[in-house]
Amino acid sequence: MENYFNILFSEVNITLTVLLLILIVYWIFTMISGIDFDLDVDVDIDVDVDADLDMDFDSIEGGNLDFEDVANAEVDREHVVNKRTRQLKWWQIILIYFNFVGLPFMFTFTFWIFLWWLMSVLTTAVTGSYDNVFGFIIVLAALIPALFVTKIVTTPFKAFFKNLNKDGDKAVDFLGRSAILMSSISGDKLGNAEVLADGNPMSIYVKSLDGSELRFRESVLIIKQSDDKNYFLVSKA
Image (cartoon, rainbow, N blue to C red; front, side, top):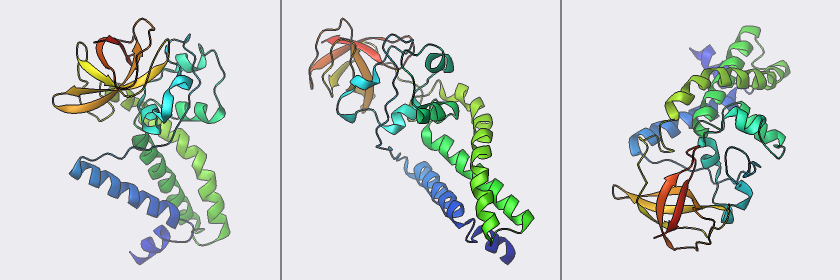
């Protein structure tokens, strides 16, 4: 038992071990309290309106698109690889390819850290390199294989999460409801709106139905959902 402890918390493996423990605490706290932590990091996916996504992420105002929103967006491979009109940045391609986009970010991230940790611990334990420089090389080398295994393991979950909203609940029918705009929109510009559903305020992405300008804090009516189910078309209430 002491030997296992020495391996897990050796200078080579301690970083991934501590990170994994933090993630375990995060998931336990989330399950008990029901509180989810948004990753408030702006991410810009350069997909033009002419693409099948029908979204211009560059036009979103005020940093309304955070990392979790991108991570939970259902982006099909053919949309971003075969039909895009502007070239994606390398890090965007990595996020999409390894399922950090298309699945909840923390879900995929946890799988990746766990698999990276597992590969590192097992390999350094077998080779006896958990307390020397060679062990650090093994840990770094395990990063890439862990990503590929993560993609393989998490891909089957896409079908499950596709029918859930970002909070993991069954999708709410927003059509016909009134909402309050949290940003001004016009033309093909995408913005946020707040809508009450079953007494709970929820944030959704919206676009003007006819392209007319709709201003911040204006009341709108949700008319229809986009074909890709990523946003709603609205008009003045």
